[in-house]
Image (cartoon, each protein chain N blue to C red):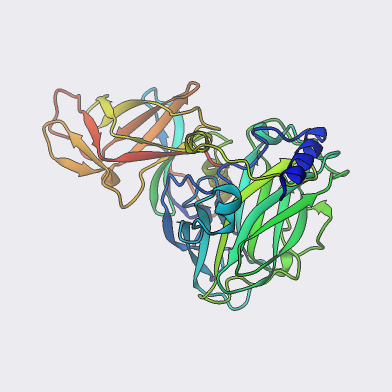
Length: 57
Length: 366
């Protein structure tokens, strides 16, 4: 799974609930839910040092 | 199978704790639901869900050269075919090799899988009860030994079995005995039981057949390299996994029932209205078609006709959006905020977006 352009995103309440990114070229919003397979993969790639997540704007 | 044999098998499975309606632990075993697409090319560049719902294509190393076109096939399951004659099945999953891989390295593997959620299989007493996998499969050219396996998530245990594929449809039945070394399957929303159909498997994934053991292994050394020629096409349908030692007739269910089951893991929402939140964000309360397994990933399928209409301005493609996000899910609803990188013509600070002819994909697959 190729994940690029990852950035945290704040919801309207100012809480970080999502990682915005591209997954295999598709723009995606991944919830910070450990049961979500994409978020699990993001955490794995961050741990392996192959992906960094930019801070929210 | 005669009706007497079918009845005997069913009674045997009921005595083992299975049988009856909803006995098939696999969703979309007849391959008749394909929400994402009916055909997808270039499969093998990454793992993922592409055509028939719930069926995952996986690759293990990332260096695999084989590429496939994955199709919800109808041509192979005509009214004279075995799947139709025996079970009324009219669709199959087809893997067409489009780029051959002459040699499979030790860490490489390509396979088709279904991951079964614990809530749907934790009734299986895997330590004490057998389980039977049955399916229809055939090839167009390549024949020989192929492997199917189970992987139990809790405990990390596998069991590999072989079957011999030919150019004719066959119904295969593989019975997996109870696993005395197993850990009970968890009653939760995680991947607790996985069915694997191997296309290629390097030596790292090859083990002895017909025994439960630790680790994620999927094949034996007899597994053929199904991707060694672009002449090769593999077909699969009528997949059934049931508690008990006996295969029973494929349990046919209505399209609507299968689709609803699949939508726990994948669903599209289309043509909705997003209320204005501020100058660049529309907030949309989505009522999911069914509650999903986990908070889903939202994405915009590429190549579609997704557009937004900014009130007072022109259409813009959704692909150009700066981002959208999900907030809390309350038992079947989801708030999706759709944002744009550029402001509109403004109506105060308010700004509306209407999605027309487009869709957002919600994915909570395992």
